[in-house]
Image (cartoon, rainbow, N blue to C red; front, side, top):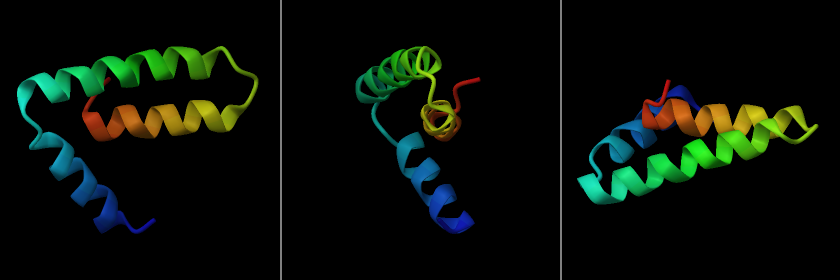
Length: 57
């Protein structure tokens, strides 16, 4: 995926309304916790990208 596409997705996610963004952040945190419990390193990678796009440390 091109760098500009990641930046565009991050900008769109940043423009979400408050309640929707809160729900998406809650999902991403749960997803990351579940990904870390699997043996597949790509699960962790995908979860980290999603969290990065949402600005979750």
